[in-house]
Length: 435
Image (tube, rainbow, N blue to C red; front, side):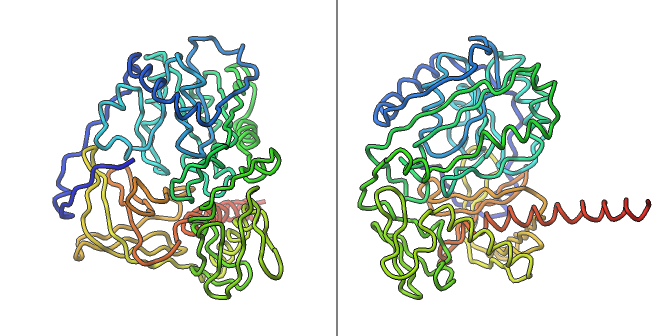
């Protein structure tokens, strides 16, 4: 899928009028029928099926909050396959509205900026639930999984559940990641079945009885999964000759020699160009070293080790991203405006973006968001790192920088954790001193 792109100067883009906030519309029945029909071929191809649990606790027309894990492009089609003809609004990234603003609004979409504090989102969700009598679908992870395991959930989701006061339904999919992992250059694998488990997790009465911390813990438990482990457990053989294409996007550091930016995923092989060590990705999703130690046959274990290394760099003060980028901007729903080139840096102090012949200088605190909007082959343009606020988003496309997206997202998440811990420690120390 592509997106409308236009070239403008930075000054021209900053002078553009920002769109007015609009409340969600009631989802059009005709458009919902059309989406359901268009989803059929892909769902049939994936042999999609689902099971339910406690769904008798939710009325057929009762508005509810639907929380779904985010693994691939089939997720929305699966949601329509499960819930149609239930009226369904859904929280959607704002860039999806570019060129499709009114169509998405008629379907019931609610725009928001990923990992940017948006106080209006809760009121929009309440409006859709109470005034439009529409259920609301939300991907609490906000981003696709990179390695087939759960991405961080926002803390205090329980606060949202208590404010909405509607039944909470969870949808956890299996096979969606294995069928079309984001790192694999949008290549769809054959013979991978996709299924989902649909569960009424909480009724309004059960939400009222639990604390925010207890609700958060329940969501953490539901949104715990591992796509590669599922593949092995269910004996799903993926014999695609390109199954390792792009694997270096998530396995960017060699676990043998430690070199970074030297990995290459192509065909069925992952190779370190620095030390020459090579692994083959077998049909069950395991990495097999051709020579020597096979340290991480399970890809999420390698991914987790890289996260530990990134955290170590942050704690030692050696972490730094410093790359040339092409810059796109989103300020309305008409286009992504390409405004020129610049430089993106990321350190323990946060992000800094400069460029456009000195006109642009934007900084972002490490506490601005608990994660990062980062994507591969974004709208068929390039890998992207997105920062910004509710006024403007900056889409940064690294140039000649290698596979930096996954590491930058890891660093953002780990830096947020470190920065959040320090004020808490200071507060505890102050309390102890007063005693």
